[in-house]
Length: 295
Image (cartoon, rainbow, N blue to C red; front, top):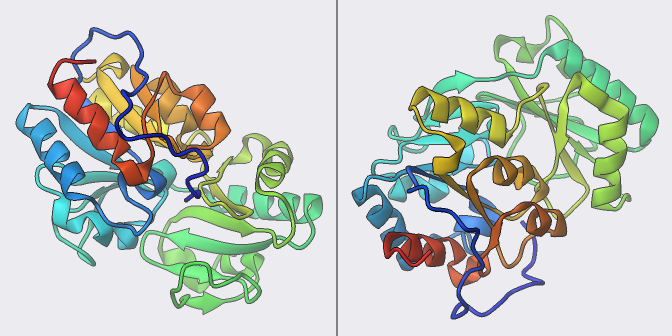
């Protein structure tokens, strides 16, 4: 999640695209978007989400977080029980509450692709260290920093963690996390995308040089498109919100999209509209105006 370098006044009207198609689904990122910097959901935002659903608009949380980190919104599920986690790697039913989430859809990163990506990025950016995110397990290399304040299931080189017969083979791989202690984040992302090519999808949502590597063609946008197709919802009927590079494809795909006031420059360029920062309830500002017919 980024610091709010570009905070604008919450009083200001959001810049909006010209659109007349009534929305049927709201897709919102969490960190830096729906959540305030203290990881809370403001009362105003809770009320706006509830009002959207009362008006017949479905709400999807679309995040890079794993399912086990979805407790931040567990009290605000209401009707919107499905979330897209891991940047599109999983669709999760949140109704069971923290620790009891059910995986509805998994779009895994094939282990051969993961191994190739690890090797190519090691060569392109020496010093890169890795963690492996699975449906339930989390594994990391010994040098991988404690970025998430959780205890890994095992410590070993990524090549060993991904090898056939390892302790992790019982579960699908959702994504690989790649951290570099020295590189500038956007430069690391560009380098990794060139090195990995079409073997995997590489993006980032952290202010540090931490990359998220998913299966080929797996993104927030592609999984959201699948979920919408199952519901007979077109992209023109989707309103999306985001703040970081892992949101760009989703914001480009949606009929209407809003970059937060604290968003990364690539997100500001990709979205068709802009709202105020996450700490100023930018998602709620737009939803309120949508429901009032003002945009």
